[in-house]
Structures are given as C-alpha cells and as structure tokens.
Length: 175
Image (cartoon, rainbow, N blue to C red; front, side):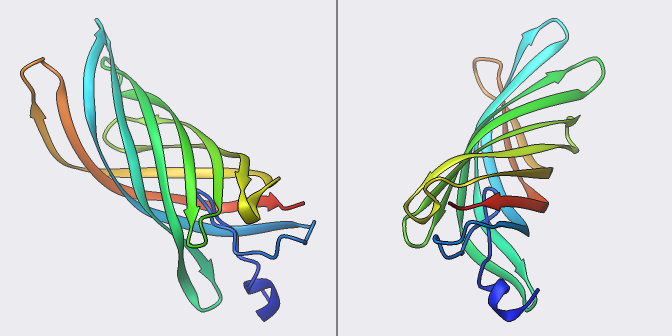
C-alpha cells in the first residue's frame, strides 16, 4: 500500500473509510473491532434459544504503520442457538460512526458455534456524510469471550461478552 493509498482507509463496522469522497474506485481494507455486549439468552423452544443485545466497540483499520482507530460501531444483534448441537446463526444491523459524524450502515450475517463465535458476510447497505452512496461487502469473523453469566428472575440468562470482530478483506466503493 502506497503512502497516498494509506490515506484511503476504509471501515465499517465493521471496517472504516477515511477516503476522499470524490474517488469512484474500489478499495479493500483490513479492519477489526474490539467490542462488548450485554444481553439476554432466552430459551425459545425445546431445543432452541435466542440471544439479543447491542454489540459496541472501537473500529481499527490496519495500515502500513499499524492499526489506526477510525471510529465506533454499534450493532443490535440476535443469535439463534440450537441447544442440542450448539450451532448458532446470527444477524446484526450495524452503524459505524466516524469522528466527523459520517455514518456507514451494514448487515452482518454469520454461522458458527455458541460460546466460540461465527464467520459470515458483512454487507454495506449505505451511509451518510462522506459515506453517502457507499457500497461494498466482505467476509467477517466474530469471536467472543463470555465474562459473566447470571440468571434473572424471568429465567433468562444475562450474558456479558467481549470479543473481536475481524474484516480480513472489506471491499468498498464510494461514488
């Protein structure tokens, strides 16, 4: 990556864009987020449970000089868990907020194993400010570390989780 292209950093939620809005060429970045979520896991069937919470964290874009903080991400998420196998599938609607109040929106879908994490796709659905008209997508990997679990009076498990979300190759285009 050249010095000028390192200025064209991208991000979104999962990956972050620090690019000049006038450029209309495809760019690819690598980014990650260190996140936390608190939520509830409720048994929703004989062999199924649903987790709901809002994942939030800082997004870092990898550059030639190391990771650079690029903004924050917030993702309301639900995860369906098969209690008999531990398999899970998740869906999150994410909003990335850059320091200049520009926003980037994306959908995250992934499959994996409960208490481990998941892998899937991160599809950019739009944006505002310098991200207006952005399009893109890429693979995403989500890993979590369950810090605490408690039972509330309703029978729901309250979970507090921290982890990392990684975009190895997030490709995007600004108009």
